[in-house]
Length: 110
Image 1 (cartoon, rainbow, N blue to C red):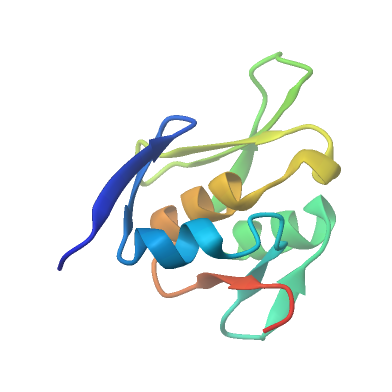
Image 2: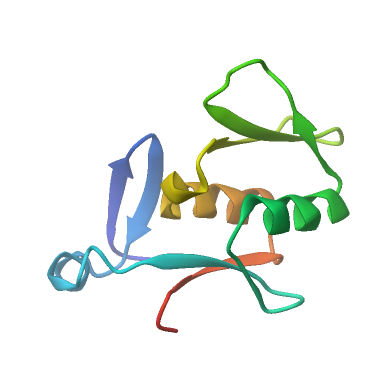
């Protein structure tokens, strides 16, 4: 694999073609897709339904700004902003990494 590792908002990711990414429209919106059903996650209600089916439970930490999920069989914790409008690609990729082969992040137009 070749490319450049980029650290942004606490997450490392490999950018294989940094020039193309820099010239692309950075405001392009991403969507989280549940692969088994093809459903685009468009609310926390639909995300919670899917995550519960995968063994995730709501985790109440007392922080009113976070919506969190924990899986008892792992040490993973998914932390999301309380407002779905602030749910972005960093949060989506966190979900993808913690649920391999279940979710995918796509450009909204794809």
